[in-house]
Image (tube, rainbow, N blue to C red; front, side):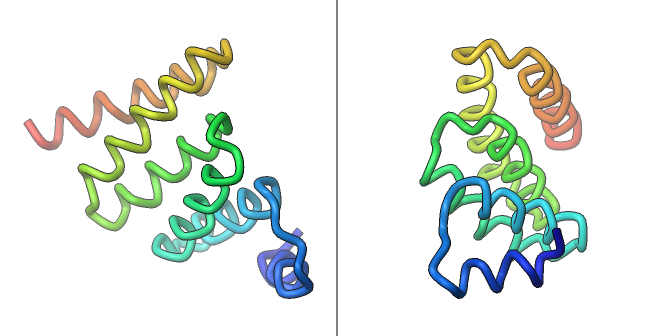
Length: 105
């Protein structure tokens, strides 16, 4: 579904974690990182246990050069993934954190 379609749903009053995740991913793919981060922040506000949203939020923040914020999002995402047993998200987030450490260190 296009971001345009999802934005129309949002404008009609539909607002939930899944819709915000779709918008965040769509804008991330379109390299509109600021907009992606806004939607992904709303997504994790709706559902703090959404590990995939934390992962994408970290990416959107990192792409904007907001490395400390990205680290916070990924750290929270790793915690959530560990609690949920979401091994794939936990592994991917671990890779992102290692890369961030490598570039900042």
